[in-house]
Image (cartoon, rainbow, N blue to C red):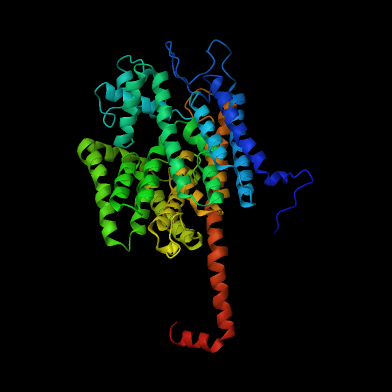
Amino acid sequence: MTEPEPSRTGARPWHRNPHLGLGLIIAATAVTVFVGFLGPSSVTLTLGPRDGSLLPPWYLPPDTIATPNEWFVSGLIALVLLLGAAGLGLTLRGVAAGWQPNLKRLFGVGLGLNLVTIMVPPMTSADVLMYAAYGRLQRLGLNPYDITPAEVFRSQYDEVLRWVERPWHDTPSVYGPLSSWTQWFANILGGDNMHDIVFWLQVSTVLPFIVCCIAVIWLAHGDAKLQARAILLTIANPLMIWSVVAGAHNEAWAIMFAIIGVLFMRRSAFGAGLMIGLAGCFKLSIGLYGLAMLWGYRKQPRDLVLLCLGTLVPMGLAYGLWEPSALVQVLRNTTYVSVGSWVQPLYHLLTWPLSVGTTKLILNVVAVVLLVVIAWMLSRVLPWRAVSGLSTSVAPQDDPITITVRTALLLSVAWLTTSLYTLAWYDLMVWAPLALLGATRLDKLFVWRGVFLSLSYVPGRAVEMSDELIFVTSRIRDTISPIVQIGVLVAIVAWWWIQWYRPRRDRRRADRAADPDAAMAGVSDGG
């Protein structure tokens, strides 16, 4: 199908207008900042007194206006997600149709959107308050893997811990040792003021996110179209700006080191191992990228060994020497079931006749089987696209970096879509390699997935809300979002069926029809 002719004014049709899309992305961030600037609400976190601090995040003083209405702010954030998704879709369509934006300007827009987002308080998730609490425990000389924040603030007054929120304040840290270091350092910079600690945690979120995005964009160098796509899916991606940056989640640290590790692969296998090892010291789930690297080096035994040795250095020091208890706590994530996931309705159904432990065991087995099946199906249909810098004499299927990027993508997609515990900000590990592969059906699927997983957490805090708002948000979490997540799985299976299985089946049938004697011989021989 050819691109529709522009109108006499030179404008594209609105549904392929990338400038309109970029405007929607900017508008989504503007609404986000507006909601945050209104101050504490059912969506925006309460950070306690500023105590004279001039540092961001900035917002209206509490006595300036009444507490923003819960329906008003929740509706605006829903609008943010819808505007952002529409804008991302339009800009990606524009790139596919030949739009050639100024790359530096487009990157600058994305950079500005991220920086302005951390000028207001974090929203929806109270995870950042838990990061601050774990860092505070370290400042008090306590181990966050053994002691929970609630064990302290229930027995004594603490000017930082008093601001943490449910439901995780009775949970020891489930983050890697290097994540704990960033939490401790934010407490050093922020002192005894939760407001300032949160700002430094916001900085420690946005900086690795920016570096990660730059690394992905650099991997696309030499191809302006692919670089534009990389910018849109990383630093200018409104779903990631919302879920990672506005939520102040620490996901970007692990992805940043993993992508830098990929950059190292053509130069130093040991250096690549060091990077993926550092990534694992933030999040163990990034081990999927490590498996992808192993697969990329599978025909190069020397590099394979160097990769493993490099990985063992930071991992061994962090989990073996400095914080052995961290490994046990990090693995606790496998025991949770997140709201909005594909498995949530099944979990509630099975816990009626079965115990919670038995139900989780059954569902974990189902999830692992599904992960393998979905990963295999994706391996059949995902295209091969050489990562920039590959010699023309080397096929993409023989290039370690290209193999790694493609494998990391299919493993990440398989894990996120089948896992019992999956959250919108986890999707950064998909968007990064997806940006380098070129347009596929996964673009739309992960936009839909991200929108509804994010909507499942609006509001996403354990704060007082009206029964009517609870009813609406609960239906999104336990009905609409699970249906969408199941739909994503079904769409991947359909993609495999239509593009890979059915053509092969039809060819076999055609071959048998064209040569019935050979088909009969195959049957008589047991073929």
